[in-house]
Image (cartoon, rainbow, N blue to C red; front, top):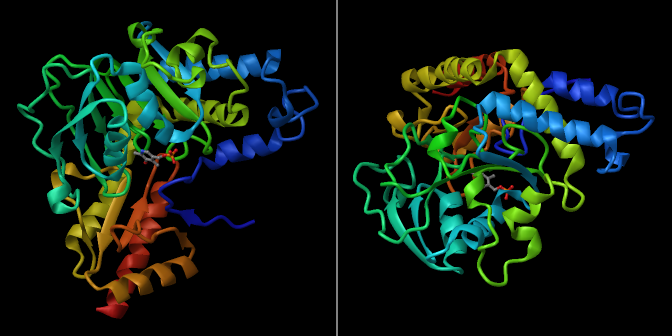
Length: 360
Ligand SMILES: *Cc1c(COP(=O)(O)O)cnc(C)c1O
């Protein structure tokens, strides 16, 4: 068996310990004689899996009692519609557009009401987070929406916007569980798990309980009402059972690492290895405003497209996978989520140094 260093933006690297455990339990989950994949979601064994996963997530993020945790399907993209359908009581919402995912979310929301783009960094290809002081928050806004970590462009909100009392909704797909968060500051926190937590197919929504009501927009499908899933403990229909099981294992792995404070420290040290090199390199440079740099997604370029392509090709041959930048940005991007070991980043930097010496 040989494993590569996988810098994919998503689906992305998972902790090896978790994969090994899952492999060991593949044919016989804890004496049940079957795989979690083959198990009724109404069984005692699965109920324990989902209950434990939920409790561990609550623990890790210190989620207050007045917030609900939901395990849903449809990807992060389904939340682009679910959020307005459930929260747009006045049919007005404010969006901060810091990249494609926030833009897509804002465009979907336009189907349901008035969307105000109250800040954007589109003028400089989303390479920074706009000034968040004194935003023109709309009087009637039902919520203010952000994408907290911009997977494609590699920026991160280092502080949350002042929403002037309005509800904050955040897509945290690519920074989920990478550092501690103050859940109370949000109305809704959600993310697809395939970036930093588990296999594609599961979305986690953490939502203030008072927002879960029957007052949804007319025509909202049963499956797209938060209340449907909250009332049924995320078991209204067959949930993404295997995904939830793996997420649960990752939560336990995170606890063994020391929780989110420890992850933050680890992620900061790990990202610094790459950013320090990029800042010193004569060939490679980062594409993002330094103060807004993400700890999870690190885009960089040589400034020469042919050289970029050569680098990606040679890196792949050396066991560094998925370093090609997003098709809309070009260059390279190293996604260095929780499960990417520091050694992986150190090995990448060593390879980049060698490439620089050979090609400069
Ligand atoms: C990947 C990603 C999405 C889209 O996720 P899907 O599960 O494919 O719908 C949305 N937002 C962010 C920040 C992402 O990184």
